[in-house]
Length: 103
Image (tube, rainbow, N blue to C red; front, side, top):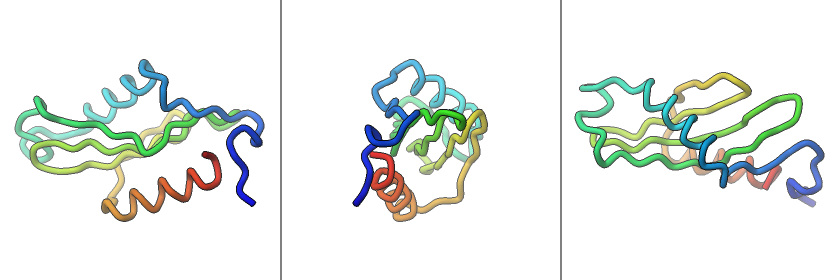
């Protein structure tokens, strides 16, 4: 039986937290390289797979940025953000697995 995040103490789903999402998206965008990752950011799209706050751990998030040249994947763990070498399939599988446990 899977637990919902209501059953797990010290967790909150922050996907509706617009200021937090904007800060994370801005940090991820700053990691992109003009000319390599994008030419123009005008139609760039950010999609969050999940965004949780976990007590004693901090933020746990998986997101992707879709630009005119590429799709870049990022993870946030605590206060660290890393760029991932992910495929769309791995992104979806990871999101589904995380949400099965925490969602």
